[in-house]
Length: 144
Image (cartoon, one colour):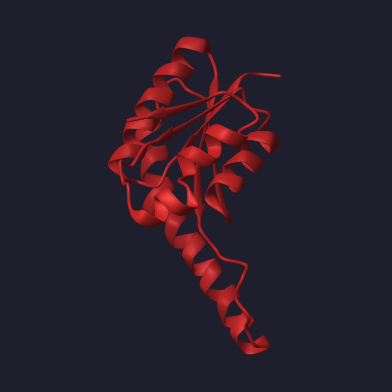
């Protein structure tokens, strides 16, 4: 089994820093890179059957849009880097979904960017970085 590193990527400056760090780490260790983008999708909505159908159609559109706007440019940028790069695009709670991707891909390391936000809701409910630091099944690096 070859080594892999998952990097959480959302197109932000923090994610770009995390990607740069993860790519350097992957090159240095001979690991593959899995670029993961998670669209947050709340399962806690009570919908009618028609609304559920519309929601699934929107979900498909959002996945296609995220693939083209977020993942495709970064995958193109990494072409010719010498790295084995794949991507994962999923819906769900961000921290839980990144953990699931890490488990499914049998990775050895998870890298994310720190956004620097310190809103009241983050302090009350926790951040993705905080959740991952507590629950990730592999070492995690939070890049400023």
